[in-house]
Image: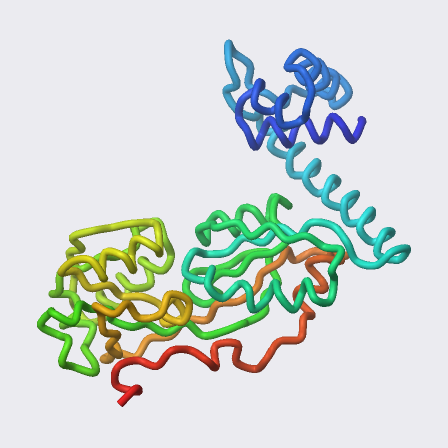
Length: 306
């Protein structure tokens, strides 16, 4: 079995389309199809459910993809390891980041690239589920995601910071003269929240359930930019991680209140695949020396500012 066949199989599993997989591998579709058929002959089992189009993987194919991903990742790590011995750490670090942590990721990438200037970094906005799948499938070297909100499997973790929440509300609204607001009260406000597929939203919904409240958001978005801009432009309030305010600043037409009853925090950190040996890029990222509190300069809430 050739390494190239593994690459074709993994690309086909990812793209779920023969033409797109061939394009991703920079070959013609007949070349990719012939290589897959040869792979099946050598394996002695079908790996593709065949029809007029791609219909999916057979059970044997799913197992083959898992092994192919592992083999390709090991080969890439070997190349990086040898190059690191000869020339120093290099390569492309693929880092999946939940949207609410995007303002913080530069606190990791800046010191990392200062130590390893021959490395390039691809920061990819992902949901927490996409990060889990990407790390398992060797499509991401690491992720920055929630560590304690939903179960994580087959990963090694490193806590980076604690996410806290603020109630961002218009200065012309009914809550603007206050320093804090309870979660139960916040549920009754006209809200702009992230969409339910985002883990931040599932965390928020869980807090509301814990106090017997059900929010009815007027606007839902999967963009943190829209979350902030709608709060600044209309009657809506939003529940946002405080580090977003560090990045955007508190818009002039809004006020950030402390959310209480309960005080809610979640841990955000790095995850890498739980396997040995660990690739040089992921290993050096996990071992990176960071300040004890990378959010020490976080913008205070309304109550703390007085």
